[in-house]
Length: 194
Image (cartoon, rainbow, N blue to C red; front, side, top):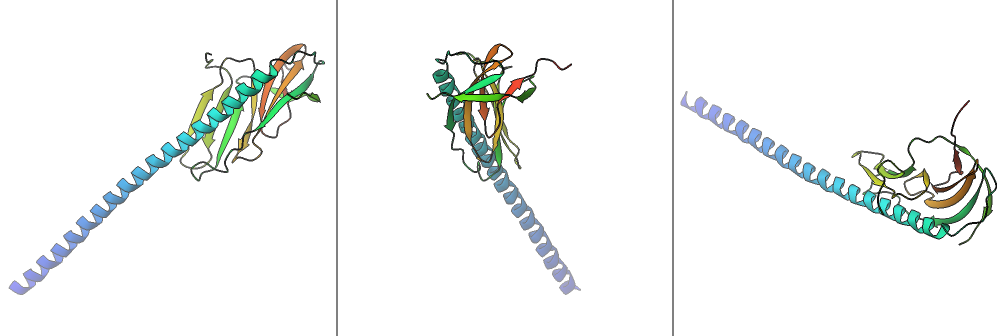
Protein backbone atom coordinates (compact mmCIF):
# COMPACT_ATOMS: atom_id res chain seq x y z
CA UNK A 1 0.00 0.00 0.00
CA UNK A 2 2.84 2.46 0.68
CA UNK A 3 4.13 1.83 -2.81
CA UNK A 4 0.87 2.88 -4.54
CA UNK A 5 0.67 6.15 -2.56
CA UNK A 6 4.22 6.95 -3.64
CA UNK A 7 3.21 6.35 -7.30
CA UNK A 8 0.16 8.56 -6.89
CA UNK A 9 2.26 11.32 -5.32
CA UNK A 10 4.70 11.20 -8.23
CA UNK A 11 1.82 11.31 -10.71
CA UNK A 12 0.30 14.34 -8.95
CA UNK A 13 3.74 15.97 -8.88
CA UNK A 14 4.17 15.44 -12.66
CA UNK A 15 0.70 16.80 -13.37
CA UNK A 16 1.29 19.90 -11.25
CA UNK A 17 4.69 20.46 -12.84
CA UNK A 18 3.12 20.13 -16.30
CA UNK A 19 0.29 22.57 -15.44
CA UNK A 20 2.64 25.14 -13.92
CA UNK A 21 5.01 24.85 -16.91
CA UNK A 22 2.07 25.29 -19.31
CA UNK A 23 0.81 28.37 -17.45
CA UNK A 24 4.31 29.90 -17.45
CA UNK A 25 4.72 29.25 -21.20
CA UNK A 26 1.29 30.75 -21.96
CA UNK A 27 2.08 33.81 -19.82
CA UNK A 28 5.43 34.31 -21.58
CA UNK A 29 3.77 33.91 -24.99
CA UNK A 30 1.06 36.43 -24.09
CA UNK A 31 3.69 38.92 -22.86
CA UNK A 32 5.78 38.52 -26.02
CA UNK A 33 2.70 38.96 -28.25
CA UNK A 34 1.62 42.08 -26.32
CA UNK A 35 5.08 43.61 -26.74
CA UNK A 36 5.10 42.69 -30.46
CA UNK A 37 1.62 44.15 -31.05
CA UNK A 38 2.54 47.39 -29.26
CA UNK A 39 5.75 47.72 -31.29
CA UNK A 40 3.87 46.99 -34.53
CA UNK A 41 1.17 49.57 -33.74
CA UNK A 42 3.83 52.18 -32.92
CA UNK A 43 5.70 51.43 -36.18
CA UNK A 44 2.51 51.69 -38.26
CA UNK A 45 1.48 54.92 -36.50
CA UNK A 46 4.91 56.44 -37.12
CA UNK A 47 4.94 55.40 -40.81
CA UNK A 48 1.45 56.82 -41.40
CA UNK A 49 2.39 60.10 -39.67
CA UNK A 50 5.43 60.39 -41.96
CA UNK A 51 3.33 59.76 -45.09
CA UNK A 52 0.74 62.32 -43.95
CA UNK A 53 3.51 64.88 -43.27
CA UNK A 54 5.04 64.20 -46.71
CA UNK A 55 1.63 64.69 -48.35
CA UNK A 56 0.95 67.90 -46.41
CA UNK A 57 4.37 69.31 -47.30
CA UNK A 58 3.74 68.59 -50.99
CA UNK A 59 0.28 70.19 -50.89
CA UNK A 60 1.73 73.36 -49.35
CA UNK A 61 4.59 73.37 -51.89
CA UNK A 62 2.15 73.11 -54.83
CA UNK A 63 -0.21 75.68 -53.27
CA UNK A 64 2.65 78.14 -52.79
CA UNK A 65 3.93 77.78 -56.36
CA UNK A 66 0.40 77.89 -57.86
CA UNK A 67 -0.66 81.01 -55.97
CA UNK A 68 1.19 83.18 -58.51
CA UNK A 69 -1.11 82.03 -61.35
CA UNK A 70 -3.57 84.87 -62.06
CA UNK A 71 -4.75 84.33 -65.66
CA UNK A 72 -8.53 84.06 -66.11
CA UNK A 73 -10.07 80.60 -66.26
CA UNK A 74 -13.19 79.91 -68.32
CA UNK A 75 -16.36 79.00 -66.44
CA UNK A 76 -16.56 75.30 -65.41
CA UNK A 77 -12.98 74.61 -66.48
CA UNK A 78 -9.77 73.91 -64.62
CA UNK A 79 -6.04 74.37 -65.19
CA UNK A 80 -3.45 71.88 -63.98
CA UNK A 81 -0.80 73.92 -62.16
CA UNK A 82 1.51 71.16 -60.98
CA UNK A 83 2.02 67.54 -59.98
CA UNK A 84 4.32 65.74 -57.58
CA UNK A 85 5.06 62.01 -57.43
CA UNK A 86 4.96 61.22 -53.70
CA UNK A 87 6.76 57.85 -54.05
CA UNK A 88 4.77 56.11 -51.32
CA UNK A 89 5.99 52.66 -50.19
CA UNK A 90 4.08 49.47 -51.11
CA UNK A 91 3.13 48.89 -47.46
CA UNK A 92 3.61 50.24 -43.96
CA UNK A 93 5.08 47.77 -41.46
CA UNK A 94 4.17 44.93 -43.84
CA UNK A 95 0.50 45.98 -43.83
CA UNK A 96 -1.80 47.27 -46.61
CA UNK A 97 -2.77 50.91 -46.22
CA UNK A 98 -4.38 53.89 -47.92
CA UNK A 99 -3.91 57.64 -47.83
CA UNK A 100 -7.02 59.81 -48.43
CA UNK A 101 -7.56 63.51 -48.99
CA UNK A 102 -10.99 64.62 -47.84
CA UNK A 103 -12.89 67.88 -47.61
CA UNK A 104 -15.96 67.54 -45.38
CA UNK A 105 -19.50 68.21 -46.53
CA UNK A 106 -19.00 68.36 -50.30
CA UNK A 107 -20.53 66.45 -53.23
CA UNK A 108 -18.60 66.45 -56.50
CA UNK A 109 -19.11 66.01 -60.27
CA UNK A 110 -16.59 65.97 -63.22
CA UNK A 111 -15.17 69.19 -64.81
CA UNK A 112 -13.31 69.82 -68.08
CA UNK A 113 -9.49 70.17 -67.84
CA UNK A 114 -8.31 72.51 -70.57
CA UNK A 115 -4.74 73.68 -70.04
CA UNK A 116 -1.51 72.80 -68.29
CA UNK A 117 0.63 75.46 -66.67
CA UNK A 118 4.26 74.61 -65.77
CA UNK A 119 5.71 75.92 -63.07
CA UNK A 120 -0.27 79.13 -39.91
CA UNK A 121 -3.00 78.03 -38.01
CA UNK A 122 -5.12 74.93 -38.43
CA UNK A 123 -8.81 74.65 -39.16
CA UNK A 124 -10.05 71.47 -37.46
CA UNK A 125 -13.17 71.30 -39.64
CA UNK A 126 -11.35 71.74 -42.96
CA UNK A 127 -9.64 69.36 -45.36
CA UNK A 128 -7.80 66.39 -43.89
CA UNK A 129 -5.22 63.79 -44.81
CA UNK A 130 -6.16 60.36 -43.49
CA UNK A 131 -3.68 57.50 -43.39
CA UNK A 132 -5.03 54.13 -42.30
CA UNK A 133 -4.30 50.44 -42.45
CA UNK A 134 -6.64 48.13 -44.32
CA UNK A 135 -5.87 45.03 -42.22
CA UNK A 136 -5.37 44.34 -38.51
CA UNK A 137 -4.22 46.17 -36.55
CA UNK A 138 -6.57 48.89 -37.80
CA UNK A 139 -4.81 52.20 -37.18
CA UNK A 140 -5.87 55.61 -38.50
CA UNK A 141 -3.84 58.81 -38.43
CA UNK A 142 -5.59 62.09 -39.30
CA UNK A 143 -3.69 65.26 -40.19
CA UNK A 144 -5.52 68.56 -40.58
CA UNK A 145 -4.54 70.64 -43.59
CA UNK A 146 -3.79 74.22 -42.47
CA UNK A 147 -6.24 76.99 -43.28
CA UNK A 148 -5.29 77.36 -46.92
CA UNK A 149 -7.90 77.86 -49.59
CA UNK A 150 -8.14 74.37 -51.13
CA UNK A 151 -10.51 71.50 -51.72
CA UNK A 152 -8.80 68.15 -51.11
CA UNK A 153 -9.91 64.83 -52.59
CA UNK A 154 -8.65 61.44 -53.78
CA UNK A 155 -6.91 58.38 -52.40
CA UNK A 156 -3.96 56.08 -52.93
CA UNK A 157 -3.85 52.44 -51.79
CA UNK A 158 -0.56 50.65 -51.12
CA UNK A 159 1.49 53.31 -52.90
CA UNK A 160 -0.10 52.75 -56.34
CA UNK A 161 -0.16 55.92 -58.49
CA UNK A 162 0.88 58.33 -55.71
CA UNK A 163 0.53 61.45 -57.85
CA UNK A 164 -0.57 64.68 -56.18
CA UNK A 165 -2.07 67.14 -58.69
CA UNK A 166 -2.95 70.76 -58.06
CA UNK A 167 -5.61 72.59 -60.09
CA UNK A 168 -7.17 76.01 -60.17
CA UNK A 169 -10.81 75.72 -61.26
CA UNK A 170 -13.58 78.16 -62.10
CA UNK A 171 -16.76 76.61 -60.74
CA UNK A 172 -19.77 78.74 -61.70
CA UNK A 173 -17.74 81.92 -61.29
CA UNK A 174 -15.91 80.87 -58.09
CA UNK A 175 -12.18 80.21 -58.53
CA UNK A 176 -11.15 77.27 -56.35
CA UNK A 177 -7.83 75.54 -55.63
CA UNK A 178 -8.13 71.74 -55.77
CA UNK A 179 -5.58 69.16 -54.61
CA UNK A 180 -6.20 65.66 -55.97
CA UNK A 181 -4.37 62.53 -54.81
CA UNK A 182 -4.22 59.50 -57.10
CA UNK A 183 -5.71 58.78 -60.49
CA UNK A 184 -8.89 60.84 -60.29
CA UNK A 185 -10.57 63.33 -62.58
CA UNK A 186 -11.01 66.81 -61.19
CA UNK A 187 -14.35 67.19 -59.49
CA UNK A 188 -16.41 70.27 -58.79
CA UNK A 189 -18.62 71.20 -55.89
CA UNK A 190 -22.39 70.79 -56.39
CA UNK A 191 -24.13 73.53 -54.43
CA UNK A 192 -27.67 72.24 -54.81
CA UNK A 193 -29.69 69.49 -56.45
CA UNK A 194 -33.11 70.27 -57.96
